[in-house]
Image (cartoon, rainbow, N blue to C red; front, side, top):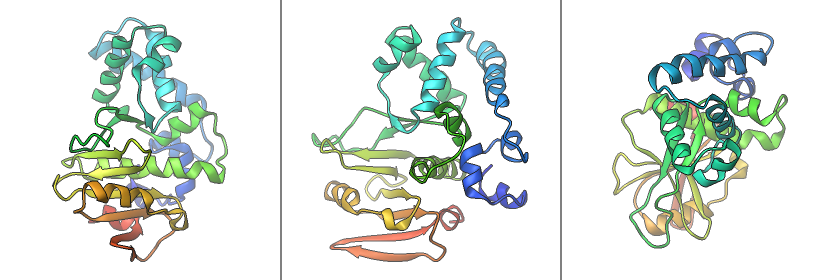
Length: 250
């Protein structure tokens, strides 16, 4: 469920949406049906995977899917998954293609102009739903530290749902600066997006590093605690702070 769906259902508690995820059977009931997460995964294997891809090793594939959900939002290295899933690295790469093809994972590739200072190949992988991320991380109640990563997932869900014709990337340099998302409809003027649960948590260092390499384009901070958009400047860098809702309505 995206923001308009939440409005239609009169369920606008964003914290509850982050914990339970966006699938109506999980989000709408008064009580969280934890058992149904595994039942959904079993049905996904039986209906989507077996019918479309005919993979043979159910345990390995489901273990991989669980690890992707638990480590959602991290930089993906197939080698790290091969041993716990007891399959080869090429098989892990094939599993990831299956998750992407069935929209159970979003593979976000790095934005770059092939400069030697930029990460150019390692993708980040996000699970399709925050509820499954919480379930496989064992989160039954959310702490303040949990909202940042879940908010990043939710922003990505909204971008993908509303802007399917846009190319969505992330950006990272070899010194560790990272920008959450880069929407590259115009590669010469990429839109840079930082996701912050609270606007007070924003540090401009990552956007400054990006704009040294790619100087043109807008800079946005999407946060849940800003109702009225505003802009700030950090030296030569201009940043607009706004709500996800106002961004989604553009």
